Image 1 (tube, rainbow, N blue to C red):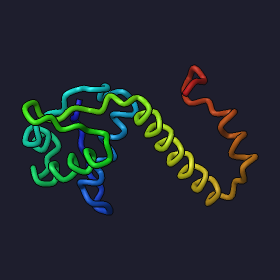
Image 2 (spheres, one colour):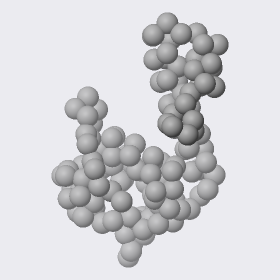
Image 3 (cartoon, helix red, strand yellow):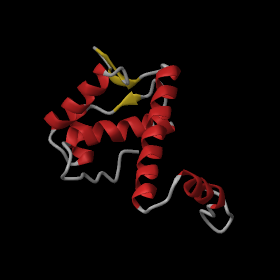
Image 4 (cartoon, rainbow, N blue to C red):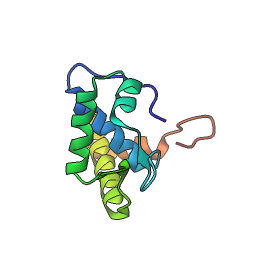
Length: 127
């Protein structure tokens, strides 16, 4: 579930961990209320220092995406509204990046919309 961690040197690792976990929450890869691995195990899997992982998980707790339970570790939030808002926010960010990139290439809104409408994606013509 948490395999394949690759980090970019341009951004702090703990923030990249936060982003990855948020994406996993938004897509359902980490389920609502699901127990999260212990810090040391999670850090070992990601190939980071346990302090870095702790910082990321603490940040996600502050944001309300993880809940710490004294005797049983952490679990993902079961607040479906928070997850819905997170998913919308991630989609908005992705859309903004796409629109900026298309603008940089010289395409306006109308042309960009046409690209989306005509996108083939794969052999089946679906995303």
